[in-house]
Amino acid sequence: MMTSRVSRAVAYGVVSLPLLAGVAGCSGDFDTTRTVPARGTLGRELFGVACDRVGAQALREDVTGASFHAVCHADPAGGYADKVNLGLLVAITQDAKTPEGDVVPVATQIKNRNYRIARIEALGRRREELIRALDATIP
Image 1: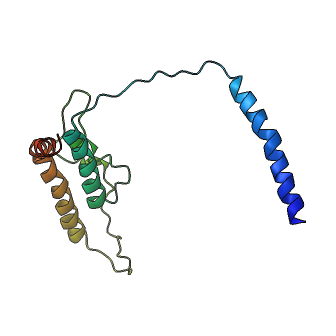
Image 2 (image 1 turned 120 degrees about the vertical axis):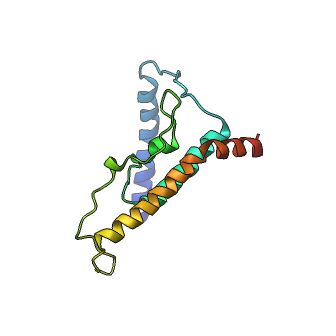
Image 3 (image 1 turned 180 degrees about the vertical axis):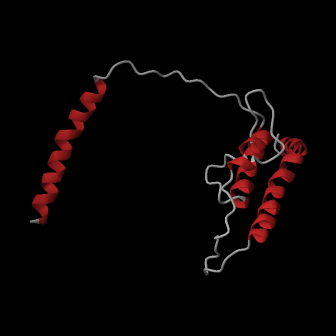
């Protein structure tokens, strides 16, 4: 019984694979051109990756990374932001709880968030030094 199922599956595969290849071959023009985005030096690219990691670790509530993206990556004009965009973070609430169910005071939430934001902004303040160091280390 099992061998008939296997042989039937193999038969379907043998018949359908050439059929799929034939259909794919009859498609229209295949565009092979692409627009390559402007890239920075290796140090600049590595800084962006490292900054994203620090930001994601520090501000876990910002799942998209929108609040710190401008600190880590240059805009089209080549400029960076110096500050985390606080307007894109979720609001601090009075009913926040620990995993154990204890209420976290608003003052503690504000203190913790300010510390985590300061970590990202400190990385942004030393951005050019870090990029130069990375470029010199990995030419």
